[in-house]
Amino acid sequence: MTDATAEPAAAPARPARTGRRVPSELSFVLDESYVEECAANEPEWLVADRRAAFAKYRALPVEANQLYTTYVDLRMADLAGVIPWDRSLADAPAATNHGLDPNTAGLASLDETGDRILVLDESATAAGVILDTLPGLIDRHPELAHRLLSDAGSLPENDKLAQLTRAGWNQGLVLHVPAGVRLEHPVVLRWLVGDPQVAVLSRTIVDLGEGASASIVEELLPSSNAGDRTAAQALFTGTLEVHLAAGSELAVASIQDLAAGTVAFQHRQAEIGDGATLRWALAQLGGRLVRSRVDNRLSGDRSTVEQVEIVFGAEDQLFDLTSFTRHIGRDTTGNLLSKGALMDASRSYMKGLIIIEPTAVGTDSFLGEFGMNLSKKARAVAIPSLEIDQPDCRRAAHSSSVGPIDETQLFYLESRGIPPDEARKFIVLGFLEPVVARVPLASAQDRLRELLEAKWDAGPLAGAGSSGTSGAAA
Image 1 (cartoon, helix red, strand yellow):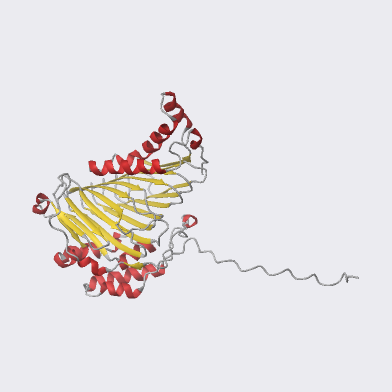
Image 2 (cartoon, rainbow, N blue to C red; image 1 turned 90 degrees about the vertical axis):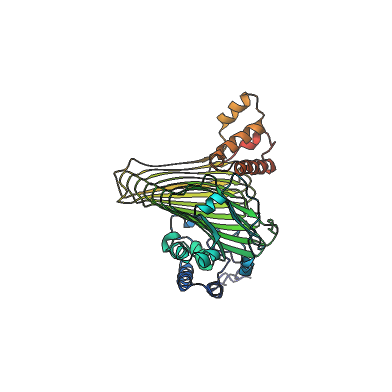
C-alpha cells in the first residue's frame, strides 16, 4: 500500500541549454596590442587620439540610446575568428598610369589585396585638390592631417563601433578641396573588401573649404577573395567624415553591394557650416548584416541637408539604419527620407531622430521612414522621432508607414495591360528610385539600376504571379 504522506519523486533535471548570445553582443574584439601596433611610428597627437578612442570603445555599450536598444541584434555577426587586415599591404605603390574616366575628376581605389589606384585629373591637381591615403596625408601634409584626424567631434563620441574604427583604423582616404574650387565632375572612392576572417577598419575624410563644391561616388564592393554566405565572415567598418566650410556644397552617393559573407558597420558624420549644403544618396543592397549611422550637424546658419537612404533586402539580410540630425544654427533646413523594400525573411530597422536646439530659430525639418514588405516573413520597423527645444520653427514633422505593395497601384498597372510580375517590379524599383536619381555619375547610376533589377530578378517574387503581393505590415 502506498504511503500518502510520502514526498513525490523529484522530476528529472532538464539538460542545460546552449547559451544564447545577447543581441547586442559583438563577437569581434579589438585588442589593445593591435592599437599600439597601429600607433607605432605615428605622431604623438595621433597616438593619443587612438588611445582615447580605444578607452571609449571599451567603456561604451553597443547602443547608447535606450530607445533603440530593443532593435540591436548582432547574432548573425560571427566574427570571433576575424583578425585585422595586414597593414603592411598599405605600403604597395599606387598605380599612376590608370586611365581616368573623362566624366570623373579623380579615382581612389583600395583593394584589401594591396592593389591601390590614386589619380586626379590635371585641372583638379592644378587647383590644389588633394586625394591621398591617410598615411600619405600624414607624411605629405602633416598640418592638414592634424586638423582633420584629431578633431574629436568628427565621429560620434557615444558610439562604440565608431570609436572602434577610430582606435584601430588600418587604412583610409582623404579628399581635400581648397576654398573656392568647384569640381565639375565627381570623384570616385572605391573600397574592395570581404576576404573571409579579415577586418578592414577604414576612415574616409572629406574636407571642403569656403565656397568649394564637389560630388563623390562611394562604392563598397566585394574583393576578388570575398566570401559568400557559406564562407567564414569578414568585417568592414568604414567612416565618412565630412567637413563643410561656409558656402560649400557636397553631394555624396554611396552604393553598397558587399558580398553575402561580409558584416558592415558604417558611420557618416557631417559638420555643415554657414550656408553650406550637403546631399546624401545612400543605397544598401549587399552584406549579411549592415549597421549604418548618419549624423548631420547643421551648425551654421542657413545650412541645409538632404538625405535619402534605401534598402533592398533578400534572404535573411539585416539592415539597421539610424539617423541623427541636429539643428544648431538659425534658419537651417533638413529633409530626410529612408525607404526599405524587403523580400524573403529580411529585416530593416529605420530609426531617426531630429533634434532642434534652443539656438535653431526658424528650423524647417522633415523625417520620413517607409517600409515595403514583399513577404509575410519580412519585417520592417520605422521609428521617427522629434526632440524640439525651440518652438519658433518653420516646420518640424515626421511620417512613417510599413505595409505590402499597394493593391490599387498594382490594379492600375494591370488594367493598362502590364503583366502582374512586371507591375510589381515597376512599383518596387520606382519605390527605390529616389536614390538612383541622385547619383551624380551616369555610369554609376546605370550600374545601380542594374544591381537593383538583378536582385529583383533573382528574388522569389519575379514571375510569382499576383499571389506574391501579399505581405503583413509590421
